[in-house]
Image (tube, rainbow, N blue to C red; front, side, top):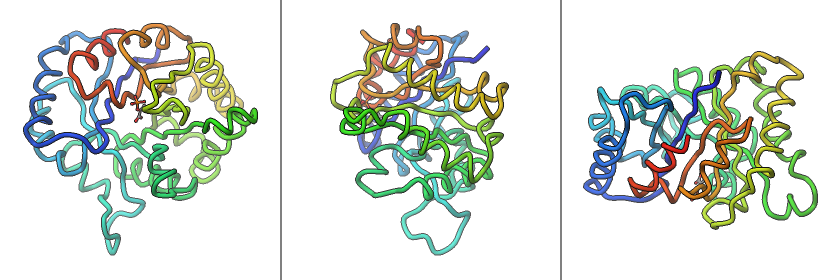
Length: 249
Ligand code: PEP
């Protein structure tokens, strides 16, 4: 039985004060016997204060990226051990904004994924097709290629220490959500692909959906057989909408 998971991706938003206020508001609204894991991936500079704020609570903490090295001459990067010192549990890798704006390719993303695991963090590997790729009927090919980069380098077993997020790029921050059927079709495809190599890992793998999830569409999306929760951008910046999505999960 997979335990649902909802992760907020705050992207490059917030101030020291608004970040702490948002964490406090989320904590007030979280139910102590919540049947769902909940975390927020905050900007790097917010991690130290967020770490103190979430200590001893059921709210988990994550980063929005992670270095593909442990230490050394990697200007601008933050390593797994640095993040682990602040009790980060999750690290997003391969978010479409990293792939598109910062040109991170499958090899780099796979290496970040590996360093997250080696450092004891759970990588949340983001995969998904663009609008054009969907139009051209390439959705399955794209997600298979993005996933294969990780499996070929680090083995299907590595997925037992990871979370996947299917995020159609055309649905991120656009207000255009995949229909529950469209999302389920891809989630099922991903799980079947992994099951061909290891059925147990496929069965236990948490696969999140991300892309304009809102309180009014979350329940139907999360009700699909292979959707185990969500990666939430815009709607995670307000406690009430984020908590409504958590409750839907
Ligand atoms: C995201 O950034 O991962 C995301 C899904 O954003 P939004 O919910 O705003 O589409």
